Each structure stands twice: as structure tokens, then as C-alpha cells.
Image 1 (cartoon, rainbow, N blue to C red):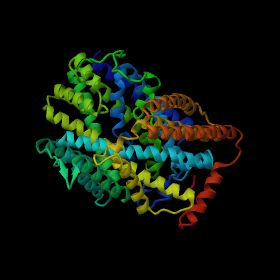
Image 2: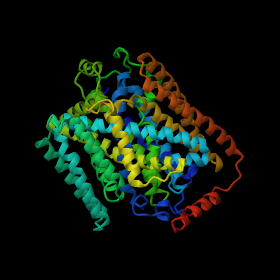
Image 3: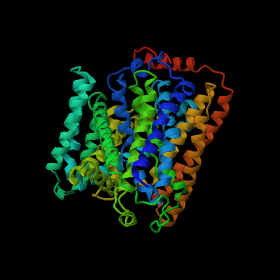
Image 4: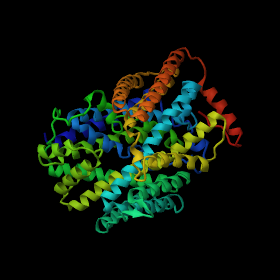
Length: 575
């Protein structure tokens, strides 16, 4: 099959979801209302709560939720063939991810910018909230530790990406100053920022940088990991407008341009897909496609991490409710397009089926190198760019996605640590919460040795934990919709499907960990499974209670907001 035809079908399906289904959700399901002030205005503090232009906020949201997962997941999943991966990415984006991401944003905005963990206490109950926090904490720990390892590996494997990766921080800082201090108009800032970023990519391609094999007795990989966590910790404490927001925005533009380069190359080169639609010649030991496909491809179809970003940072910056459709649903569209691009790069970026099989028979790096190699070849063939520059663009794209997710992940982990402190009755200040978040992730990363291999220690649980988180978020959305007497099916259908396949996958993993005698993962798997099933039981009970709910959400929220704001001398929001 020609890759261009597959690209046209996939892009058409995903965009149709935005222009049609998201409008239905905004009008009939979530009833977005611009007359309601958002928490960015009613709780504005200049640090976390900041009203933000929807295009800038979309850049933050898109790059935060994307990370390396929509590249890694599809790049791994095509081992079962390109057709199942293609169908899950396109249909999942339209009916699952967009609804979930937009819904989490709406739910948080209607609840004073509270996180999904906090919302679970209101709509599911205190026990559900406590168990929810366990799942959230473990998920963020996996993301932060594993992405640091992924980025460090890419910086070592592709030294030409070092300059653009770190130079992007300087560009982002200057972009933030230009927007908020110098009041430059957004188009000018955007053009200057993107040009500077691509100039860094060209410079990096001509000036590769690599650390010595050891620095002060530590291997290069460990040094990169430590530097990444030090940066992420500092960035998580800065006001969002100073670094996080402009970094994500300018990276979002660069990454969308990179997607344009990839899709444009597919249009010009029109390479054939050499991978089979259904692959029966999988490597020995490869698990079955059902249910593993649906947890291997999370980001790019539906991902619980997105709900954490939507309710953790994006909701606190939403200028008006109607922006939730563009930021939330179109953010999912951007990720779906990235996942589709990863499928194209890893199935059409090789010359023959034999070459493709040789890569996937010895598959041991999580799929990133297959994306970089395959995507680089397509760009080289389509646009005539040198292979080195093409690979640098692809590697920088992957690194920047992962780095922006890590930025947001550490900030979210800080919020979760503070929420856990509230549950046990201990107030944890921002600086201490950040130190704890970074320290725990570093302890996991280096717990298995100085090479940082511990960062991937619990990663095998990411797919199932992430999808269970999505299911739990959908449960909260269903409860809220039932309370408001609106159609809950757009949330219930994805909830049932994701819940069933994910719990099935958890049981399969239990057997695998038992056979491997991997007691750490076995225990964590049991903890996650028990916590999730318990929350689901509580959520089902809450849904039944919501049918007869005759309270006034508006009055309850206003009363709670009044109590909260009186403690800081602020005015309550009007939800």
C-alpha cells in the first residue's frame, strides 16, 4: 500500500473528528459557556493561574501531553502489523482521546482548576480519592524517570541534537519575555522563535556535541539524567509564563512544522509501506495483540496522562470555556497526527520487507530509533535534505516532545505531593514538594545502578497504569454528566472499553511477572489492580447515586470556593 493513501485517509478521519464530533461535544455534552469566568481569572496568581492566549496554551498542552509516547507506542505496535495500529490511532483519537482530554479540561475548569485526583474526592468519595492519588503518583513517577532515560539515550546517540535541545531553553525564555514583558504581537514572536529554533538545528547538525564517557566518575548517560532533573525541578517552580508556557508553545510550532516536513515528504516521495497489514511473523515471545495493542498505543489514541495535564496545568490557564475545544480536543488531534506519522515512518521508511523485519526481529530500544531512522529516510527522499540533517530533525523532535512532557510531569508531581500532604494533614510547601518529586524519581532512576537503568525499571507497567487512569477520568466525567442530566454515553462507551481491555492486560502482566519472578513489578501490578478496581466500584456506586442527585452543583461549588478564597483574601469564582 502507498503511504500517501494511508496518510490521506488517516488525516481526513482525524480532522473530521475535530470539525464535527468536537462541536457536538462542546454544544450538547459539555455545554461550554463563555459567560462563566475561568479559574485563570478568578484565582489568578501569576504563577500557576494565568489567563493565556488559546494558541499559546494549545502549544503548552499539546507538547506536554505528547512526549515520546505517541512515537514509541505506535513504533512498537506496528510489530503486529500497520492496520490494527492505524485503526486504533484514528478511531481512538476521534471518539476516545478528544472526548477525554476536552472533558478533563472542562471538569477541572468547572471545579476551580482542581486536578483529577482532587475531583475524585468530590465525585467518587474520599476513599476513591486516596486510591486515585496512588495511581497518579506511580504514573507520574514512571513518566518522569523513563523520559529522562529516553532523552539521555537520544542525546548520546544523536550528538547533533544537543545544541538545539538545550538552546531551545534560551529561545523559550526570550519568547516569554517578548510576549509578557515587551508585548510583542504573537505572529512576530512565533516567526522569530521558530526561525531561531531551526537555526539551532542546523547549527547542531554542523557542531555535534558529546560528553566524555565519564564525568567525575559518572557515565555520560547519568550526567545527562541529573542535568535533566535539575532543569525540570527549577522549571517546575518558575511562573508558567516565564519558561514552561513559551517553551511548550514554540516547541509546539516547531514540532508541528516537523510533522509538516514528514507528511510533506510522504506526499513528495510516496514511499510504499513495506510492513505487512497483519504481521504473523512476530519475534518469539511477542505477546498477543489483544489486549496489548490498546495499552501499547496509549498516547495517540487515549491516555490517562492527558487528563492529568488538562486538569493539572492547562485548566489553570484557560482564558474562556470555549477554548477547551481547541486546546483539549485539537491537542488530541495533534497527538493523533504524530502517532499516525510514527506509523508511516516505521512502516514506509524502510526499503524492503526484509529490512523492516531485520529491525523488528531485533527490536530492543522501544521504537525511537526506528522512528528516527525511518522518518529520516522519508524526509531525505522527499525533500532531498542530507540524511544527517533529516535524522537531526527527527531526533530533536522526539527529544523536545519528551522534554516538554517531563517539564510538566515534574510540576504535576509537585502538585500530587502537596495533595498527598493535604490528605495526611501535612502542609508541604512548593520548594519541598519539588525536592521530594525530583528526589524520588532520581532514587528510582539510580536505584539499580549508576547507569540510570532504574528509570525503566517499572516502565512495563506504564501502559496499563496510564490506560486505567484514563478509565478513572472517564468515570468522573460520566458522573458529572449524569448529575447534570446530560447524555453520558460519549464517556461511558470509552470507559467500558478501556476498562475491560486494561484490566485484562493487567491480569496477563501478572502471569508474566510471576513467570519472570519479577517480584517488584508483581507487587506493584497487584497494588495498581486493587486500587483501580476499588475506585471503579466506588465510581459505579457514585454513578447510581448521581441518577437521583437533586443537589445544586453551582451552590456547592460556590460555597466551597468562598471558604477557600476567604483564607487568602480573594474573591470566589462564579461557577
